[in-house]
Amino acid sequence: MNRPATAVREIGLPVFVFVTSGVILYPELLTLVRGDPLGAGISDIVVGILSLSLYACFESLDRISKADGLDVQTERWASIVLLTAAAAINVVVISAVPDSPEALGMLLVCVAGIVVMLVNAPADPSSS
View 1 (tube, helix red, strand yellow):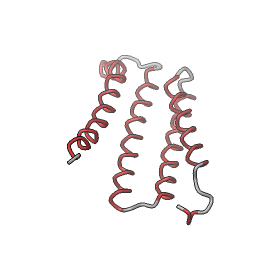
View 2 (cartoon, one colour; view 1 turned 30 degrees about the horizontal axis):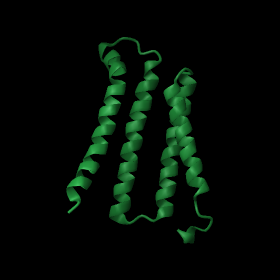
View 3 (cartoon, helix red, strand yellow; view 1 turned 180 degrees about the vertical axis):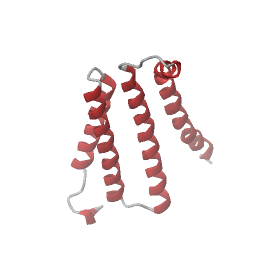
View 4 (cartoon, helix red, strand yellow; view 1 turned 120 degrees about the vertical axis):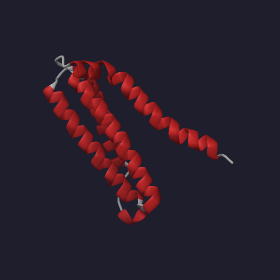
């Protein structure tokens, strides 16, 4: 009975993520298409693409978890690996373009997510 509301939420979030990313990236993408030099705008493009990639990876992980019945421990470690990769890419972006607050913000969020997942991880793998 509640299926239409759930379907709207399942469709609404990806549309919101992609539209928001498109609006944020539009000026840099327009500069890229024109062939003008990007300068610091490259960090916006990389962080935007990384955000979309992370979203897609977490969505895929969620679907795989529901379909194949991944245990909590495996899902947690997969999420930690994804966040670690995103953090490493942000470090590279920050080293290439030091004045990139977007990359710094995403790096802080990724590190916070990793710390929270590691702190909340059960000590005994059989307890999950």
